[in-house]
Length: 208
Image (cartoon, rainbow, N blue to C red):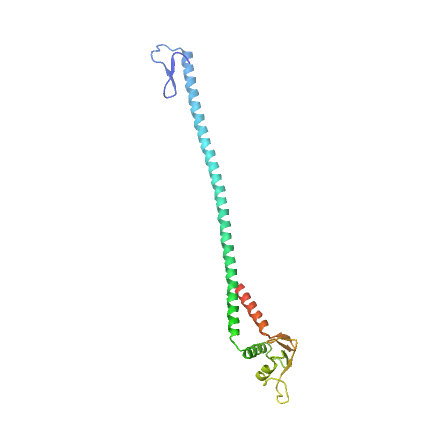
């Protein structure tokens, strides 16, 4: 710039010390230079504020995305945990049914065959209680045992009130029993009743 001016630490142009006379044109130049400096400072400050605003916006957007991603990850982890618990519960339910059935099998195994067959058939008869006539099919091996147990209910000349007609069926295995009534046929064998018990346990647990 002119020999009359110098740039101070304040970043403004000032009159150089020792300059006695300054022409109007030179002074006008000084004013314009300082105005330019002021405008540059304002522009820089405005640019700085805009940069801060843009940075904050990008940061906020990134935070929201990160938060959403965090929520998604948390939700995914939560669902994994819940599903794991469901699997555990279902596995536990199956174990419960298995334990109960094992216990029942052990209890059944403690009975003598004759007592067991009698109990099972009597339980089956409870399912057709009220029937006026029952045709009972049993295995040949179990016929004698059951006739002794049910003699008061069997049809015969000495028992006019009897309503059970027992028949030995060679096609049936030991422990099998079929009860034919006017309503239909009931399978009263031990295996069928165990299956019914297992289904009942499973259905009961599922309703919980």
